[in-house]
Length: 258
Image (cartoon, rainbow, N blue to C red; front, top):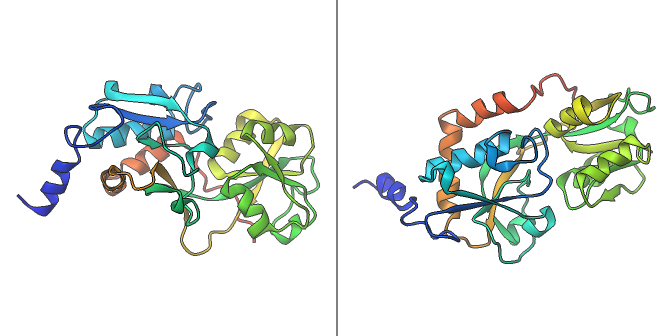
């Protein structure tokens, strides 16, 4: 048997040491937001992340009825604490700091951060990062969106941090902040379905290695290698791109802030 086929044979329900034998337990937050999930029901296979989770499960040999979904809050997922799941999928960006506390799979989505504001806001016409100087920007606590405010945009005022993205969106609606920083697909969903008369100011420029979302596993998990191989296979055979095209709005039209 070749090395490759030996590795593949090791990544099966019979050999993987999952939380429950023969079952793959997948976590995400509640509520589960569109366009990553649909109707706040991760188990329906709809939305990009739900579809990716089931595709990874299939790659590992688990049929849909052997995939169990559980709820895990974003901040608990990236904390160095024991996990009640095999992997979590919840728009968690891979960072060196987080990788000290948890394991990540290979990246399943290349991320761009975006700035959303109301069309009536004075920052709506900004075309450069410098033009956001003085803006009151907000993001969910503990996210790379929040890091982007302090590390890339540097508006000169401290960002507003919110426990959930819902509260951040509400702050944009009621004018507590000038702009909301979120990943681009979420930003496009916010402008299309959540906040009337809102607009994408632009996406932040990509510098060097692209930010990526990864599946989160317990630190030192015996599953990490197999889960990463599954994600790599889905990228290589075009599945990830097909799912992106199906579930995520075309992001090509969002201008890049200079």
